Image (cartoon, rainbow, N blue to C red):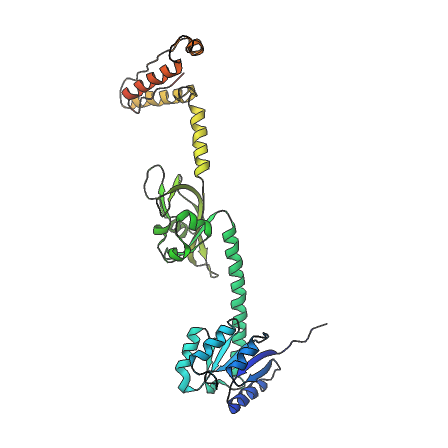
Length: 352
């Protein structure tokens, strides 16, 4: 069973009986029973009716017995900001009508546009446009809630490379509030460098737009926050397309990997260095010796290896305290420090 479609309730705030009759006749002659017009003569009555809800659109005359000029619109708009408002008026009030449109009115109707074709069409367009705006607003709010709920930082730019959006995580990691960042160049807000070379990293937005595909950020990428604090980051940048497939900007998604990168570096160091002396262990020492020999051959030099032994290490370590002698490990460390002070960076000591 199909439910009947109820006519849209139109609130007409008009003091002039003749003008009100013309508007009623134009809506009635439209050929459809899609509008139900309710008329009031004063602004106070109109505001009271709007407080009861159920109004689809307002036709408003700015000159009323209890209010005149742009203040009339301001009061109606404040009472019902979600209801489309169409301004009625003659040529003499055209400037006021245009000002009302700038302040939020949906349209301004001249007397010649109040016929049975133009008036219903203007009302339907205003109501449909408002419905579309409301739907887009809901979708936008849902998207913003989603973006602010994820753990990654999200940053968007337009095709000119200026910031258009940051989520809460991106605000925290860059040090820029969204209100201050929007409109600024990407390089000013998203300062990234190569952690090893300490040089400015390539702009990920430019790479994504130029290649028209998702690209990864520079390896060992470091983000410099607004206050100078540095954090290691990873992730990607991708172009944003409109419905026609044209690139209109880019989105950069990134997250902090400082802890993970520090742990990985520590694990690598531990796997390649002796626990007691912190020198390169046998695996790393053999690798460095091979590199030194290859380098010496390329430079037509003679490689040299020097070995020093610490005999009875375990026995000395066990009885050092009881004999009044320093632990052997401290002797190791002092000896190693002496070696390092005399060796160049290409001649590292190690423990076999």
